[in-house]
Image 1 (spheres, each protein chain N blue to C red):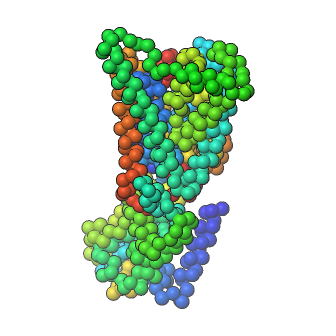
Image 2 (image 1 turned 90 degrees about the vertical axis):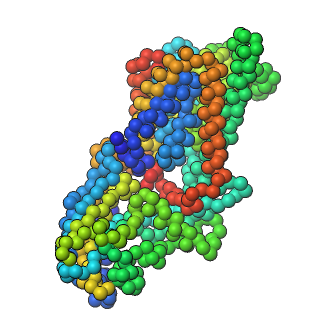
Image 3 (image 1 turned 180 degrees about the vertical axis):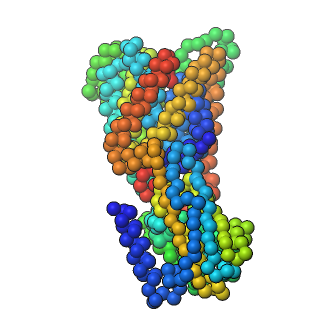
Length: 313
Length: 265
């Protein structure tokens, strides 16, 4: 069954799109990550123009994160004050990011920059995860039982940031720290959200836990809350500046990912954490290799269409 | 407004070509009677391109027929040319290309050079060589090289042919002519053929001389949800952005209620 995507300006198999949404949803349910960082490259692989892929994924992330954010908000897991500081950064970053997309599209190197950033980011995240989960598997085999948190906390870094000016008290997280760090990490993740069409949870949550020093559950709740607002801002800006939000694409992806996530969560209960992580690491690393090859191998077409304006127009 | 401009442009073109100053003027020739199986193609949710069958009567039995499909609009497009920078391949220059049709297909029963001399082909813009001569390049950034025009044109042809927007088929099976008089053929409009007016022109030649000409117009437009989403996103981007965010949030919350546990975390 073919479906015509109005903004991407192309006809594509409905089941392929919903299947990819389902796969990413399954993985995100399994691994507890947002999945935006997998969705955008996969969309590009099936031929969706990169700018439309990133913008529509942002829209899908708004949907996917809002139900989780709502649930955490009801459980009291959102530190609104800290979330707001991160958000200010996120909105600043998102706005800069969308303008960056505009400039990069105009000079024809959006796809190049996007892939470079993806390769660096996925490469780092994938290798870190791979090494970490391998270590955990070895340790659990050796000692028989060890489920302690794996990544070492970085008290020195947290202390350093806490000493910076603009100190604030964050009651929900039980922290007294400088507002500068949450703001800057928010800005960086905001820029990436626009450039790559990701929510940024996989950077934000570890940063909140290990660097800012927030309790894990509050970090996740606050992260979801800021993702909803940051992605909403990016979606809005992309719609206004680049006109690349394909709502139909976003809704199909959402349908797929929601169903996939339920199965993912079920499967997650039957697998060990480190097995799940090493699997995700392998997926992320193979995606990295594919994107890296795209950058260095001689492309099949040296001449390509540059978007004049709008998505597929 | 745009439609009016298009109509005026066509009227102007007709006047220009109807004058006696032009050696081979399609409009001055005998009419090739044609009809299309439909004149309106609608892009709906399940659109995946469409096929239109054309029928016609050859005014001079046995004359060679050439049928051309073009988009009424000409396209100004930007093409990026990739080059090596260190170990990476990235866009190193960009050209603005004008004067080329958005869509260009030709059907004939035998190769064009066996039907018409090169001058006529150029004058009537039949064949890729004629497009190439009409194409104008304007360097937007980067450094021009001697073989750029060739490279860009070949690249353009490849992009268009892969999207099934350009092709030239010279095969008697593709253009059926019954007893030299009644002809029938079809054009495929790929999904990439966007909204707009397209024209199908039939040329009849005897010994390389134009003896007949006919034209059909095909209109493609988006309908229903496709039209609504495209129109709103391109003309009311602020509203569309807010609407998209609200729909996404609503869908997310709704889904959360259905599955109770909700969310990806």
